[in-house]
Amino acid sequence: MHRVLGNVEVEALNAMKNALEDPGNVLHNWDTSLVDPCTWFRITCGQVIGEPDYKHVIQINLGISGLSGTLVPNLQNLAHLQYLELFGNAIYGTIPEEFGKLSNLVSLDLYDNNLTGQIPHTLGSYNHLRFMRLQNNTFTGIVPRSFITISTLQVLNVSENCIDTSVPNPPEVVDFFAKFGEASFANNPKAGCYT
Image (cartoon, rainbow, N blue to C red; front, side, top):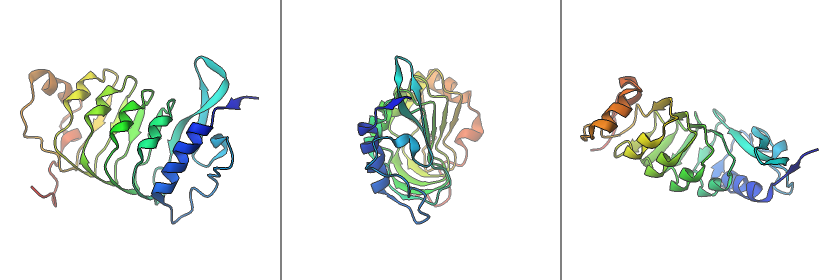
């Protein structure tokens, strides 16, 4: 039987739960009196290299769950999180800069929400990220140039936002973004954006 290092992870998930409105009661079994979040609905745990006796939260899959509310910086404490799937909800506010500390993240799916503000440049610090889908929100500013340091990135989609794509970029940035195709940046700024 594997043990779970859960206290910090439970606290982070509880902060997330408290910041979300859940009219469909999707998070009903997120019982913070338990030190094992691995039994919670839509949470996946797994072993990580170097800690064979422990399981950690590696996936939050709350896509299309009828949730609203805001994202919390406490999620940075899920040090082994690989998949953050919150697409298709009504989450609003900004992406916390602290999300850049999720160094094991492979997939960040926040598309089809009501997120605003600038995309944090700290998201360019990911070492393993392959999928970043942020389309159909209301992000402003520019796509951070720091993204060119994410050598593992295979899919980037920031279409259908209020991003300013007219800002000139150095050639290396242009080349990096070009590999994702024009559709990944299409319809910026979308209708309804205030300039």
